[in-house]
Amino acid sequence: MQKQNNKAKLIITREFNAPKEIVFNAFADADALAEWWGPPGVPITIVKFDFKTNGVFHYKTDMQGQIAFGKFVYGKIKKPDLIEFVSSFSDENCGITRAPFSDKFPLEIFNHLEFTEQDGKTTIILSGHPVNATEEEMQFFSQMSPSMQQGFAGTFNQLENYLKAQFKLKIQNKKTTVARTSTYLNFPGTTEEAFIFYKSVFGTEFIGKGLQRFGDIPQDSDHPPVQDNIKNMILHVELPILGGHILMATDAPKEVGMTITQGNNMHICLEPETKAETKKLFDALSKDGTIIMPLADMFFGAYFGQCTDRFGINWMFNCIEGK
Image 1 (tube, rainbow, N blue to C red):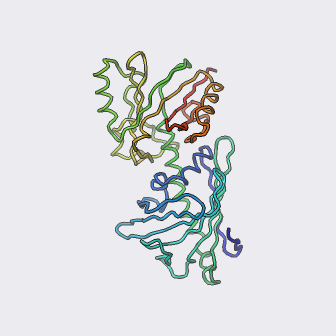
Image 2: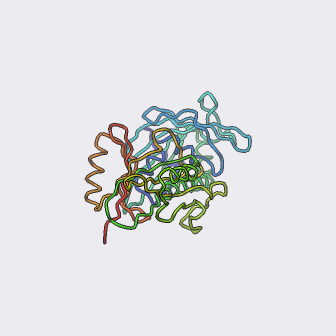
Image 3: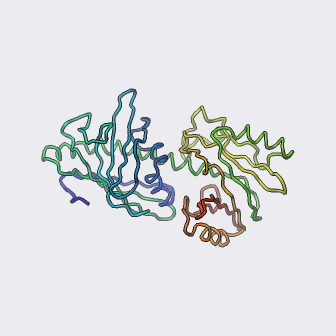
C-alpha cells in the first residue's frame, strides 16, 4: 500500500491467549473497538465504521472534557491474517488534522498488522511508518518511539482484558459428558430478575452452582479486576424447564466488553458427547454462515465455539469430552 521508510519505523509485537480469529474480530467489529481501542481509561465514540478496503473508521475521544478525533483509512484486509490502514488525527468532519501535542508529528501513519496463531495463542506484529513526511517529521516520529510503544502497550492491555472478559462469560457448570441441548440467554443486567421469574413459572430449582456472580471470579493475575458496579451481576445460571430442557444465561455488561442487541441475546447451545461430533455439527451449521468464535479448547475445560447459520440463527457449542 505504501513504501516503508526504515529511517522512521515503529515495530510492536504482542501475544494474546486467544485464537487468531477472535483477536482479528476485535479489530473488525465496531462494538468491540469501542470497548478497547484508544488510550487507557479514555472512552471513545464510534462516528463511522466501514471495515473494508478504502473504508473509514472515524472515532471521537473524550479525555476529561478534551475532545479529539482520529481516523483510519483501510487498505488491504485479509481475514484473519492481515489489516493495513493509514491513521491520522482528525476533526469532527473526518478531515486530517495535526496532532494536538505537536505540529512536528507526521500527518499520516501507515500501519501493517499481521496475525499469527500457535497453540491457540495469537501474536500481533504491528509495524508503522510515516507517509509523505518531511525529514523533520520523520526524526520526531523516531524520537516518539518510546512513548508510542508505551501507548500501544496500554491499548493492547485493554484488548487483552476485553478478550479475557469474552471468555469469562463462557464459564459453565456441566459435570457429565452426556449430550444435551439447551438455550443460552444474554441480559443487560436483568438475569437474576428474569430467572427468579422463570423459576416461579416452571417450579424448578437452579442447578450447578446456582446464581454465580461476577464478584465470584477469583482475583489473581489471570483475571482482570471486576468493577464494583457489576460484581453483583450474574455470571452464569442454569435452570431446568419443561421436559428437562435447560435455560442458561449471563448478564453481559459493557464493562466486560459485551453489547446486547436484539438477535444476539439468544443462542441454541449444543453439548455433544465428543469433539468429533461437535466439529461435525459446527462445520455443517456454520457453512455459508458466520463463524463468531472458532472451535477451540478453552481454559474452562470445554471444546467451545460459536456461529450464526445462513438463516441468522445463533448456535453455541460446548463439549466436555470424557478422558
